[in-house]
Image 1 (cartoon, rainbow, N blue to C red):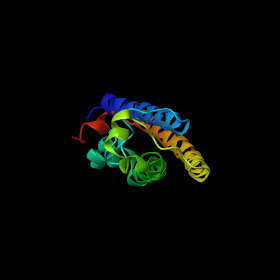
Image 2 (image 1 turned 135 degrees about the vertical axis):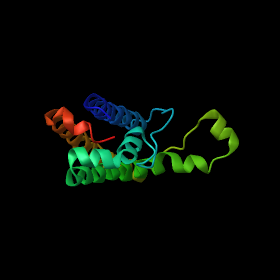
Image 3 (image 1 turned 180 degrees about the vertical axis):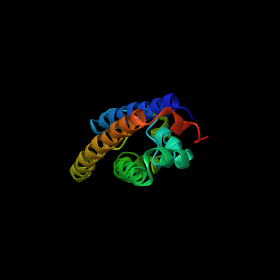
Image 4 (image 1 turned 45 degrees about the vertical axis):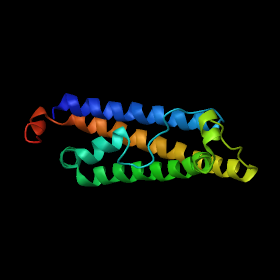
Length: 152
C-alpha cells in the first residue's frame, strides 16, 4: 500500500461518513432513505478498510491512535444502531403490503425525542470521527515514503 493509496483511503472514509450522516439526517427529518447505512462497524466501507488493513494502519498511525479511531467508529455505529431500531425495527413487523408500499410507521412523540437525542450524539461522533480522520491524513502526509515500503 503506497502513501498515495493510504491517503486516498482516508479521504474516501471521510467522504463516506459525511454521506452516511446525510442519510441519517434525511431519515430523522422524515424522508425516505434508500440503502440505509450498514449497522455494524465492520460492514460499512470505512470499517472494511479499517479492520481489513488493521496491521498496516496500526503500523503507520500507531496502535494508540488506531485504537482511538476504532473506538470512535464503533461508538458512531452504536448511536446509529439506536436510530436504526427506532425507524426500521417496527417496519420488520409490518405485513407484506406495507413493505411493498414502503410505508413506515409513524413515530410516537417519545420515539421522535429519543431519536433526536441519539441523532445529537451521532452528530458529535461524526465530528469526532472526521477530526480523527483529518489527523490521520496529517500523520500519513508527515511520514517518509520509505515507511510504506515495508508495509505490504
